[in-house]
Length: 260
Length: 303
Picture 1: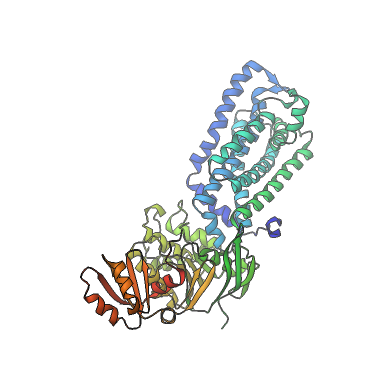
Picture 2: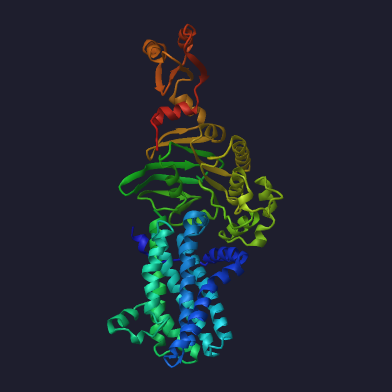
């Protein structure tokens, strides 16, 4: 039983899992990217210009710039989440793809590692597309804005790990709506995506500081504006911590679900 | 010769319920070994234990001479698996399924390329390389799954109910392919609950029930060792009364539903008696594996 809790030991062969997902994605890449981007872009341009006209400047910049940074982080979060929940669940449960892979000289650790990196890759693609649109709109200050991309990768890994953990516990697709509604939506409200966290009561601010998305936004926003984040190391540390803990939890929970 | 698979005292419980209770299996190279048993007998769990996919609660197993689950990854590099449920990749074509699966064995596209025509030929899917999985029939999917299990040119193949859900034509084609594999010298281990399949294909069988192996041997030896050679099946109105009278005519009479099974070395007295019965129909046949199976595992319905 103690084997269940051993640290993940994936082999490099996990790349084959990533390659499989990439091959599937390549077949429907354009609709997939458009689907991922349409929602945050409509929100960004609608709220950014609409609300921005009412609100004026927020935190010393335009509201559009403020919201663009928030949406860069949150659309990365959602891309990683969708891939690690719905897509991973159909591969694990509906199509039995994981079972097929595990019959080869692969371990479940390889499978989870492949899913984890893949979900983060898709999140990275979504984040990069967002960044391009933000840059075209004129709200990204280069070269600092490019430093947002590694932060996007970390946000992707953090939420891919959490998503895969939830996936390992899920009994069906319905289960995921609890996580989306009860965890991610409040997190989006508390992480400074739409409005500055500084306006919230102190205890709520303290709660926000424990959330991965908050640290993602804290990293991305100054970088887009062309400055160094104030607490970059802390923000990075929290995201790395979530990513590692999420990957570990996902591996253990998946072993518990499938290795029995 | 070193056994291809050697398992000793395998045990596995789920939530306090023992599913596999002390299973010993030894399979020599070139054998076609069948694991027979009713639903829930523990066949699939036994296969998973042998493949090192799950940890046993007790016992040990060596696959291709390597201890599993500790060295399962190495061992499985030389093994092919045909699972009970189709898990082909629905997003891929026939050929892509083979290419992607080979990568899990560390076999690149260039190494696999010369094998693909042979694998498709073997699966009866030549010319269908670019077909979508959804367009394949059940039999074609099964044969592709079999071909996929051969991408690494394994010495040993595990098959969990390879023909369940197939129509008779498709089943016969799979049997023919499996015989071809044994002729090539590959070792086959399969589970089934089709007696005909076990009798036709397997050089040796183990009958499993409630997590234990209850009998083992070559199909003919099992029949000879466990059951009277002749059977008369009787059914029709008045069966009850006839059975009460006929007790002494055969070594053993069993009833399952509306049919009485009379087992004996010499069934002449039974048949003689039945000739006088107008209402009852009967069938005289040699004993087969199903008779052994039902004798050992009982006639109760299993879920």
